[in-house]
Length: 225
Image 1 (cartoon, helix red, strand yellow):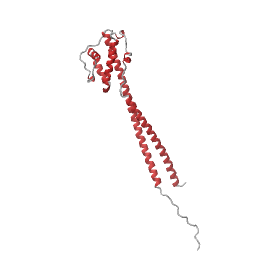
Image 2 (tube, helix red, strand yellow):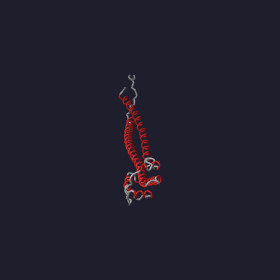
Image 3 (cartoon, one colour):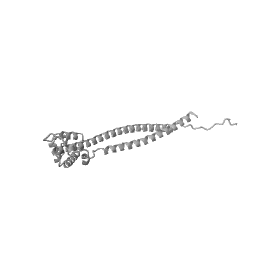
Image 4 (spheres, one colour):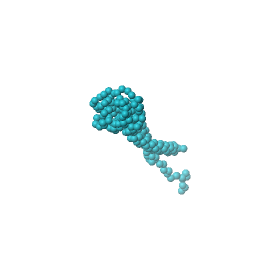
């Protein structure tokens, strides 16, 4: 095989390999794109906290008067919950906050762990829990009733804050996954661009390769006069 033929074979094989690799890069980029879209959808679904049902909260704490027997909380007067600024406080919740001074810093701390756009719904849900807890303990002694309401509020806050933490962790994992996908997509784009350039160069080399044109063959014997 001549050097020219070997070169032609080499470029043919290289062209096929580049085309296969380019196709593989394009397919991989499609899968990476799908992964980015699906990760973005998951992140969007996990954006807001899910409302907590009153029954779930009350089922998680002691429900009898004897189980809630204990001393009453310290009395308070004014409401000082900076994180609840601008959020309407209903009468049942207002009564708890004004009768138990320890509930005010607790509520402020709970709201600090809740995203600002979810705080209004958090307070609304807390009001429902307080109302249901007071109805459940309507015939109880005052100190046991107050203790039960405080336990219901704490359980409601715990469930919501746990949910917020789960969402934050999920969003962090999603962000890390998106960063990996974007890095992989950038690498694949670089590979595809390199392969495309190689194919272009090989095509130019093939099309501009000088062709050898065979001239008319001369007779080995001179013609006679």
